[in-house]
Length: 149
Image (cartoon, rainbow, N blue to C red; front, side, top):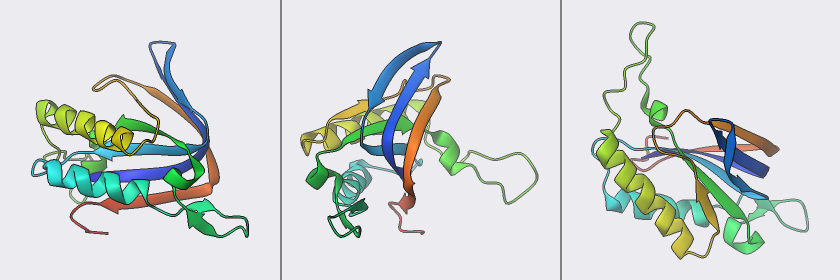
């Protein structure tokens, strides 16, 4: 499982001209699911992200988690995080999970975040979405459940 975590002042998702989800301060999480991912990857990522200390404390240091600031999360499925561009000019998405599996783990991830009492919203799986955000910092973190980076 791969994620791009962005600390945001606000973020939203619009589908077909209709805003379907919106958060205030918190995290925009772009989530990619690999073929070999399991519930263990979901648990690892949800715990890692919920406890990631990337929000500023009173001294201006990144020392607080989304749990501590009582922030919100917007999770958007993004299979393109598994785009392999090492050969040729068109990305290969062979490492990405099939839609049925990816949607199941995406839903499981959102439930795991919500279980930690982080208000969570999502996009629409397999839809063309317009994602808007005000990146706070900017702070952008890349995570991989296989710990490739």
